[in-house]
Length: 397
Image (cartoon, rainbow, N blue to C red; front, side):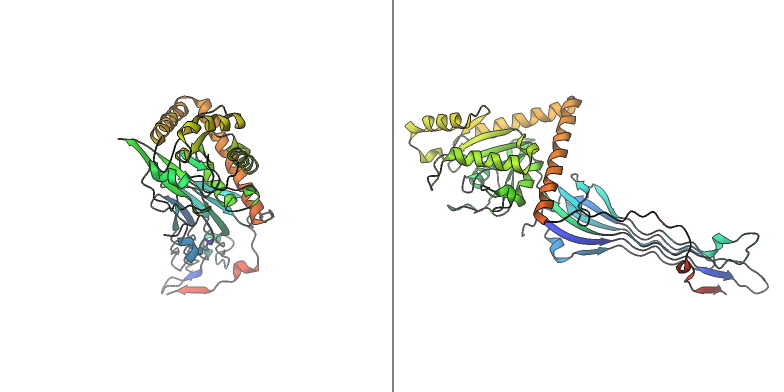
């Protein structure tokens, strides 16, 4: 199945049914009075988080979604049938943005989460509601209101605990193949990975975490160069970043400068994301002579002025991968425990996630080249006008 993480759709709620203008007419019952029923409410459009979906490919082929209109009222005080609601399934991890205002409507992060994106129109009232002691034969009704219509943009971010980042051909795809059952394409050229890949890293019974491999970044990615800007957003869902550095690049580039370039791109894309815990993974040590490995690792660490965790490994031969994934799992478990037990830690985590989401949306706005324009927030007009009387008169037998 093709991976698609962005899609534009149009959703339209159903219109409310018009009220009925009707008068009771029965034999031997003179002056029966008004009996026009109300219309039915229009159906609304809802989004539902579904864990069975992992791409937005379905929205590439169907872009218009409309709920059912409400039925008009009828004589004998019979109300019209309400329109059926429309429920649209989206992958968990989907952010919903109004394309006209660039307002973030919702963030679908849980299985079964229901989000209202277009509210159905309200029903019109039949003439039975307007009878009074001075107006016993009212010819007044109200029309149903129109349902909400919105141009929406879906942006899916993969749901993972750990994200891999680094330059193209740093060995990220090889690493995720080594520690999980994921089988992304691996080749000896840059930009082999074109779409994010997810892998479940299992250490034992009920001990696992999800790792995401995103396409390699290049300098200028936060400004739109390469594939980086589209896929940096996927890292905003992660708790931990593993910065994979190729210690023996085939193009003889400087690993230190490459690592610094990645950090700069993170900071420019999202300062909050750059503050995320990040561990250094020095990869492809199998390409160096054994007597040079320690010196090479020390040289890179000192040049980066690195003080965090460091893992030296060879992803292709799986040397050193198990100690790394075990350390990662213990760290994730401890973080989850702290969030559950300490309200301050939980609040801090939510604040960081909020900031990353806001910064990600800003970058998306810049990439789309759209300008925010105000939404028409006129209050509902409860006054009657000529259109309110544009109804047909129905006489019940």
